[in-house]
Image (tube, protein in one colour):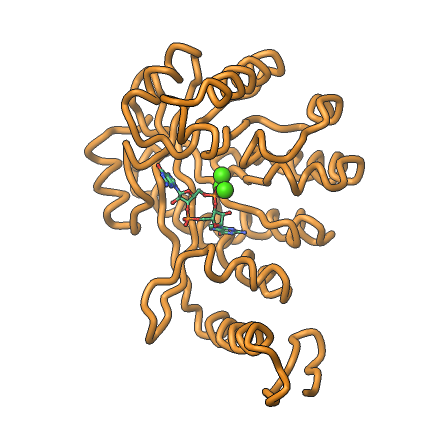
Amino acid sequence: AKRDGRNGFRFYTPDMTVEVRQRVMMMDELREAIEKQQFLLHFQPQVCLTTGEVIGAEALVRWMHPEKGLIPPNDFIPYAESSGQIAQIGEWVLMEACTKMSEWRAQGYNLRKVAVNISNQQLRRKSLVMLVKQALADTKCQPETLELEITESTLMQNPEDMVEELVQLKALGVSLAIDDFGTGYSSLSYLKQLPINKLKIDRSFVRDLDVDENDRAITRAIIALGKSLNLTVIAEGVEYASQVSFLASEQCEQIQGYLYSKPLPEEAFLAYLKEHKSR
Ligand code: C2E
Ligand code: CA
Ligand code: CA
Ligand code: CA
């Protein structure tokens, strides 16, 4: 097969394995999806545990495939990461989230923050700071209403290099959250140096809070760590009232999960906001 620059293989040969074939097809389909902008965002409310108010929303990308319908991110983001196409998808997500936030605020919705997932590849590109700056300017989105979620494993792959990058992002006025916290072996000394605002307790710890003493211990420790570093702590993947009780007893501040709402298309999300009042 022939290479087509950094976009990968151009056509298929019989000697390709099924897996390689699948990757190549995915890459071609993604290229088309990017050209035709076949993506959309869903928004999942983030709720204040004590008041029940919606304080933010996480923007989560979906692929509107012309034949296959709505494709969840776990089925294409990993491919896009390895092909490099995540850069273009991520840029679209950032622009779209900022555009929506700006529109909603102009319409009088008082949502405090929209959170956008930043992939490993995106963070490693030197242009991310410029991109975020441009997106804010182009959409007239107020920086303090944008939050960037970066996974713990991405941050801790190269923490020395991350400090400067994050400092520059932070200087734009946006806030920074560490996603999937607890799964990535943070170095506590780096954690202290990083200009972050929020820890998101990974769903894997939240899931079995009712039955697993270890998960309770880890969750308790993360909340305590967050408090001592002056960070907001949010638990993700909350599905049961019993999990909320435990999180409340440990004074976790925010929660996100199916118990409150699944990620919603824009219209349904705005209806949810109206019903649940944000501030
Ligand atoms: P994530 O950043 O950890 O996002 C949370 C995922 O957990 C979302 O899945 C959300 O729908 C799901 N979730 C939320 N509450 C619950 C719950 O109570 N129970 C269960 N079982 N699941 C819950 P989703 O939307 O399928 O996204 C999966 C992953 O795809 C995200 O995980 C993130 O890593 C990635 N992703 C999504 N959108 C983007 C994006 O715009 N850019 C990048 N780079 N990655 C994205
Ligand atoms: Ca996330
Ligand atoms: Ca997460
Ligand atoms: Ca995750």
